[in-house]
Length: 204
Image 1 (tube, one colour):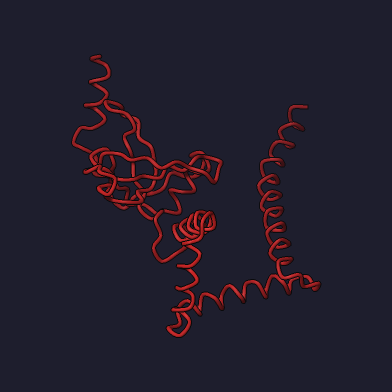
Image 2: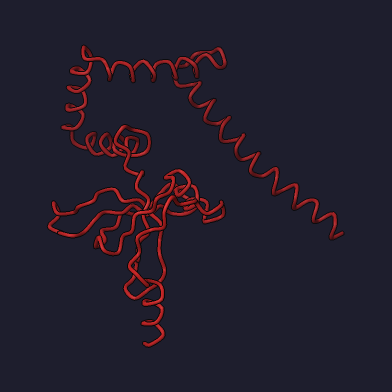
């Protein structure tokens, strides 16, 4: 009985990720395929991809860039529409745009005198516009979620990590299950940082 249960669990471990991946891909494909209302399966998907690529070309064309810029500014002036439009624009641009924001992985010391460190992404290297000199903004994604939270930390508790942003994001979102991202060089932690923090905690 235990052997059968073991086989079942092994099969579940293998098939569950495959099933979820296939399901998500099918849902995404059928959703995009139906956006244009074309009855022929697959044609709507290809047409949508083609239109998105065409708009990408137009945004790079000097003749149409002015018109698209005018449309962009108009949407940013409308109440409520501005909030939705700018939030979506910033989110997409932060992930896949030319000015990606999630490309600076960092380690953050969340609490003073604590050796615990949290992985995140620095989004702004200065928060002086908020009147916080010496602070930086850091986005901390949640595990098993598409959400996260933005914190403002003093720059001396934020340490850049020389690692792939994609690997770090996958490591965080998957709850630390994937392989730990490799670093090109160790983070520039203060000399003796873990030992000093640990010794302070023990003395207290």
